[in-house]
Image (cartoon, rainbow, N blue to C red):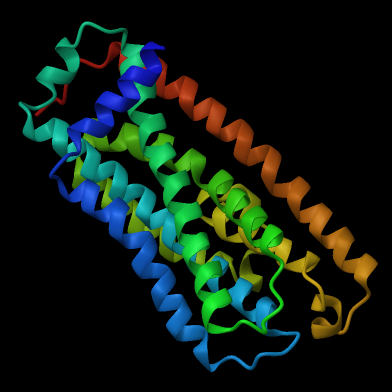
Length: 262
C-alpha cells in the first residue's frame, strides 16, 4: 500500500514538468511517424512482417535511450527541489522511496508502450483495412520489448541519483548506438550479454511466428520455431534475473546514500 501511494506521489510530482509532456506525446507521435513511413509498403502477405520489423527494431533501440531520458527528467524534479534534501527527509523507508520512484517510471513506460502499439494498430486498421494483422503477436512483441528494458531503468536510476542527468543521458545515447549495432549480425553471439541489445533483440523475435514469415525467408517453419525458442531462452532469463539483481543493488545502495558529494 505504501509503495502504491509512493508511486502516485511520484507521478503527481511530475505535474507541469517536461516529464509529463514527454510521456503523453512521444508514444503517439512515434506511432504516427511509423504509420507515415510504412505508407510505401505493398499490401500483401509481407506487409505485417515489414511493419513489425520496422516498428520493433526502431522502438527497441529508442527505448534504451528513452529509459535514460525519462529517468533523468524525473530526477531533475528532485534535484530542483533542493538537491534531494526533500527526498531524503521524507518519513518513509528508503526502500519504499527508491522502489516507488523506479516502479512509477517503469509503469509509465508500460502504459506508453501499449498506447504506442495501440495507435499503430488502430492506424493500420483505419488506413489499410485490407491488411491482415496478427494483433496478438504485436502485443507479445511489446511485452518482450518492455521486459528487455527493465534492467536499464534500475541502472539509470542509480546513475541519475548519484552522478546526475548528464551522465545518464550520455550513457543512454551511447548504449542506444551500441544496441543498434548489435541488432545486426555483429551481435548474434554476444547480444545476450549487453543490456542495451535486449529490447531490440527480444522484442523482434516474435516476428518469426507471423504468418508467411517462413515463406518470406524461404525457410522451414519448424526451423524458425527452433530459432525463436533458442533466442528467447538466451535473452529472457538473463533479462529477468538482471532486473531483480539491479533492484536489490539499488535498494541496498540507496539505504546508505547520503546525497551527492561535490
